[in-house]
Amino acid sequence: MYPLTLVRLSRNKYVSLELKNNKKARGYLKKCDLYMNLHFSNLTVEDEESSVFYKECLLRGTSIKTVNVDHSLLYMQNEK
Image 1: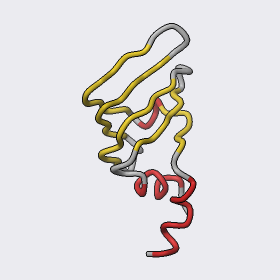
Image 2: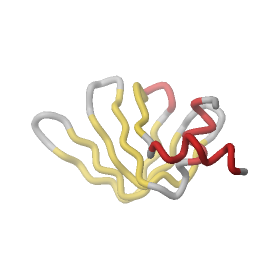
Image 3: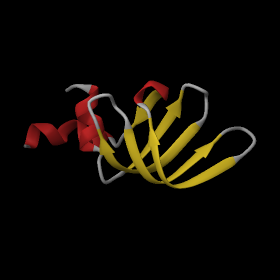
């Protein structure tokens, strides 16, 4: 399964991310495109010192280091 497929299966779920600037983010994934630009609602971005909340946010795919999704999604594509 391709990584982008896992991210697309994660739409309408909460997803955790690590960004290239070493900040961590968690939010409700609404949309994803082929460049892995992610559109979130209720996104919280944290670093060691502070936490910032965004009602709506678009993260560019080039700023994302890792995406943590639910492990049950690994088996979801095989069922379809």
